[in-house]
Image (cartoon, rainbow, N blue to C red; front, side):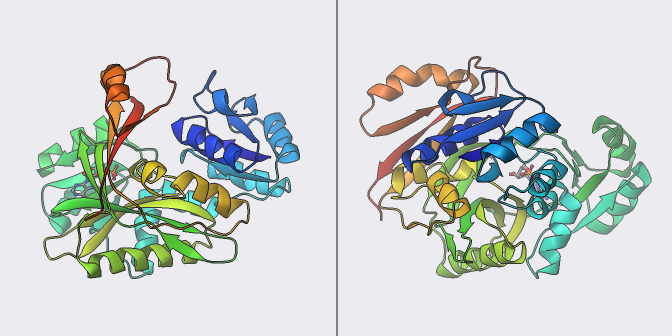
Length: 350
Ligand code: AMP
């Protein structure tokens, strides 16, 4: 029995992969009728920090993982304290949850990021703009995703209103990354320390949300090598077990900056479901179960599009399209911008 904290589509696809390998899944989620719980053997419907539910999860499961990075890191530490192994660790989760800690971690490993300053008040923003140049991107340190909790600041006069608008919480101010495109690398580390990465993925976002992933990305060999090397360093330094997604900015000369990392399977790795023998979900289950990692070389070129909100209403046409591989997440309401499913189209590797 494997436990998963979180009940979204990533948990659903993890549960499907786990079932295929003969494991049962228990989901812990505060969400009623979640996408993951509808394909899992058991669900504990409770808050993440509910002590009774955590005790039950620890008793039932051989290992617990998470599919949602805003699960409190203390909950993962508490499970560990209850005697159930957790993977990835609470250290990896805590590092990814705070953008200042995360970027400081990368800096300390010699991995390039944009310049940044920690922000506690509007005056820090004014000083930060003078140091980083304008415009700069203000982000909440915690709990931002899909472009939420972010605002560009162009002038010192905008500092106060931007600080108010993002909720007067601890923030980070980032220099603008002069990227030519966005890439990501999905990598896994096994219990025995083996690290394996899928080829680079090229990602297109709209309004801060991933729309399109193309893989393997056409890139210089040195860019592929640099991404694999920084993924290996990241996972090794965090003593990581499982799959992680690392988001990258590629500069005009092919150099890479790390934007952030997700301590979980990642939306930009969904193409592996249809283009690889072992996809990122199975790879994560293999890693946390102590199995050997599977192969990561794709057998096809893949183009994955997210179906957001009303996009999902095209399902019948997509289902009728030869070669379109459709994944639907079973969400009840197609709210605007909500990730409802994705479609992947394969072609011959070039
Ligand atoms: P994030 O929530 O950090 O993944 O940011 C969402 C999106 O905002 C990224 O995918 C980029 O398109 C853009 N972005 C984030 N940080 C920066 C930056 N420092 N400079 C330019 N664009 C950025």
